[in-house]
Length: 379
Ligand SMILES: [Zn+2]
Image 1 (cartoon, rainbow, N blue to C red):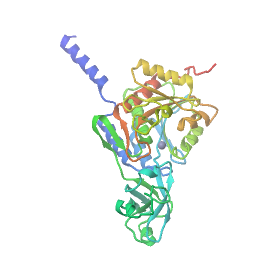
Image 2 (image 1 turned 30 degrees about the horizontal axis):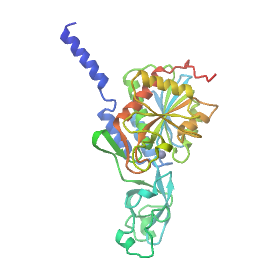
Image 3 (image 1 turned 90 degrees about the vertical axis):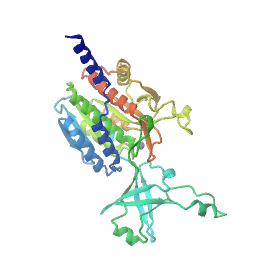
Image 4 (image 1 turned 30 degrees about the vertical axis):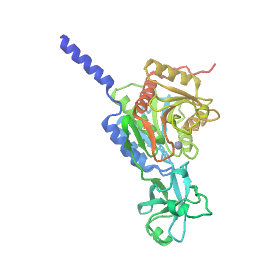
């Protein structure tokens, strides 16, 4: 081969290696997915977007009774490996409508009341989405009241104003008790490859497992097991979707991905929360629900493939779907690969693009070394 050609080929190879995992098409999917409301218990909108994206990369797919969506590669294989994220987004429920047409709410998941005042929302009523805003007294009227201390936002003093001036007008818009409410804030990009969005917790996980499926398909990887790409519902109210689907699939191994706290911003105690930073790679958790041998295998893969990782510890529970997979059946070796995130459960969750790529690569490379013969026995 001529030297020039050889060099061209080399450059091409290097290009391929350096090509971003998160392609433009993938970014379009991410934006669309993040901007599609997917409230806990009402995830169908997001699940549809997710399934439509993943279908070309899997052999078949199914949806369980509560809406957990699963793409399957090698459906006939007896040995089953799961990669999992959760699909639901924290939100609110319409709980009480007063005679003036103001709407009081109940939490649906751990949505943060402290950041609610003046936020714009969508109320998902019977006639479609209705725009509204969290009303809050003006600074003038707060400070002008000599006996009152500054009010703090609480679930029982926060209300929505949708423009209706009576209960009747609210109902005429299709808003009903039990309608779910999501923030309007959407996807955006900041400097230096930081992204912000609503409910990156954990739809970034759904995005990443979909990218793993895409890469396996594009690279024609032959897996010696059935791979179940699981986007589970109802994590935010107690890991329920994962519990249901773990019992249905009965996997032999589960790799869970979720978000974890970046601890570099003010008012976070590193002594308690540990040392985790956006941009420094996925975080691997140590804890009783995390299978030590599987974790060590993932750590080895990270080292061999030069993927930066960070470590943290969890105790009684991981607080993620890992617990459901580990404990739902008769013990499923499970591992948790988390992506660092700032401002969790606010409408401006922030993460770094390099961590998305690192987490996708770590899951992908781990799947390439796993086999039904991988020895995960503790003794
Ligand atoms: Zn969460």
